[in-house]
Amino acid sequence: MNETTQKFYERIQEELNLKDIKEAQKVYRFYSALKGMTKIISEEELQKLFKMALNGEALISEDRRFKG
Image (cartoon, rainbow, N blue to C red; front, top):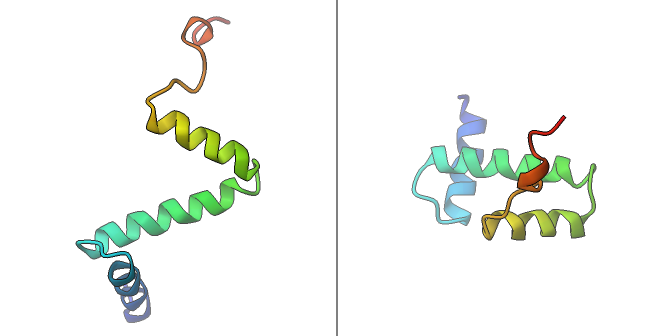
């Protein structure tokens, strides 16, 4: 990792009060993925997916999951 990248992750770590740079990298990758998702689905749909994930709900119904 070059110095510029290192400083970038250190700044993320500081601003979000993360324990180390590895966490900062994970958070940034997640953030980047979210930015990409907003180009595919609406903010409302993204919020719905978050709620489903937080509640442990299945993305698709169990009874149809493996049917062809």
